[in-house]
Length: 184
Image (cartoon, rainbow, N blue to C red; front, side, top):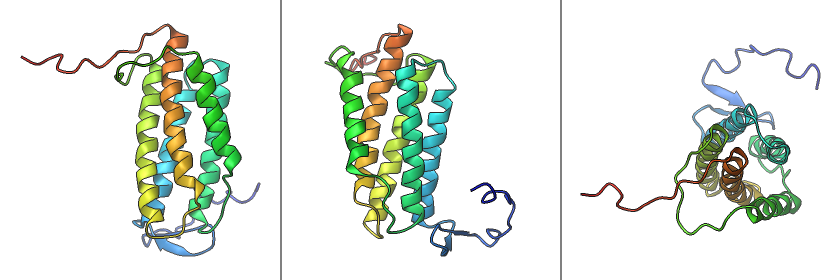
């Protein structure tokens, strides 16, 4: 892999196309390329979260997720490729359980925010949901690995719980939504 990315400027995309991992070329406006961009944006938001001070348990969880997202990107980039396994889903579900067990039960919806890390995790969660919607749309039209949408669905749950955990670690309380708070 050392020489694989040594040439960054290739000019091959100047015509509005890009290469997929299987060697085929598609329009940069294709839905598959759009999904790749959504996954890349999600991973970049996780990079922003990782730039914050975090408990090691959250940091190590997010680093695993970043690697998973590159695997997922590979699945999308190479139609028919499968990289994510049931074990990935099981790990995410187990992490949700572990982190959620330390939190007080929710009785109300909470507003996104709190500390910087939690706020960034909430943004990542919403980007994850957007990536999931785009991936589901792609799956309706083209080949997508079966577990891919399920992974993003579980990941958005994990990101929600991690946001609450980050607030807890920072000593910041969740802010509960109060319906009609500003009604006259």
